[in-house]
Length: 123
Image (tube, rainbow, N blue to C red; front, side, top):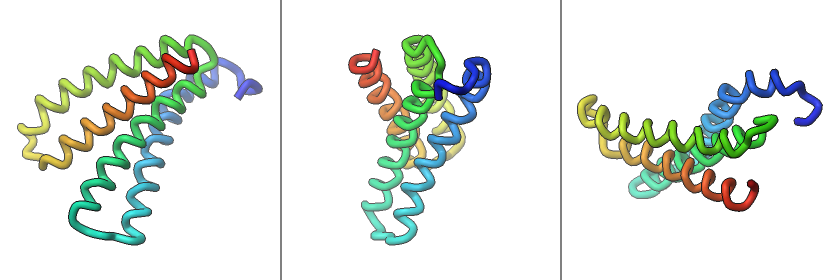
């Protein structure tokens, strides 16, 4: 990553980290689709995929950022806090199921856990 110009790294920071998070989610769900166990395993795989995708999104953003990694991690936590508030307030209104709400919470927990790890260990 050091050979890429810093301006290009800042430009691709958000799209590539989101794309990486979605890729992790779909890989988890593909693994479940190959061998579906049904029942409780479906809910566990949904929650694990959401948590892992949140953690992967933050780690990729941390890895791609050319500098100010601490600010990138703190900004991601603040954005996910805003997302938690918006999710909890809008999901019941949209008549989504409980698993959707739990997926968003698991994703935000993955973001917080990876942010905490990066903040304490890497910075």
